[in-house]
Length: 137
Ligand code: 9L3
Ligand code: MG
Image (tube, rainbow, N blue to C red; front, side, top):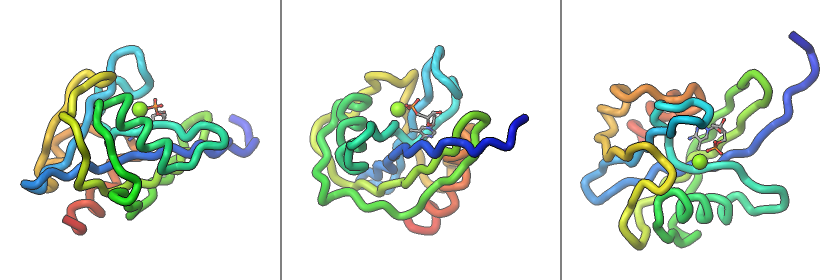
């Protein structure tokens, strides 16, 4: 153990909500950190990238959809100390997109009622966001 400060890594994630009020979660694939856990899709903000642009890019890469920036609103932040970095992750609510959602990088996708999200094992950063999401929806 060291007392050296952990680098802060900014990751952006989305709660896509469909017309029936179900939320999209995605299963992390084998070979990646936290494999098998169900996350809100998203990823790292590259140096110099605007967070919203990063999220639009990640949602296109991971799910094949196009999202307009005006349709994205951050509503809660996750803050979690992993072993080698501190993750800071705003979760953006997104109710409108174009294109069909497909799993390009994840092992599986699930559309889940807010009350059932706790049935899915999530990374430690994502799990506390579920209560906020349930209150909001
Ligand atoms: N992470 C946690 N919850 C999420 C996302 C999108 C990411 N909802 C964590 C997992 C990795 C790091 O952030 O440790 C970077 O994510 P990725 O680039 O591996 O998707
Ligand atoms: Mg990702």
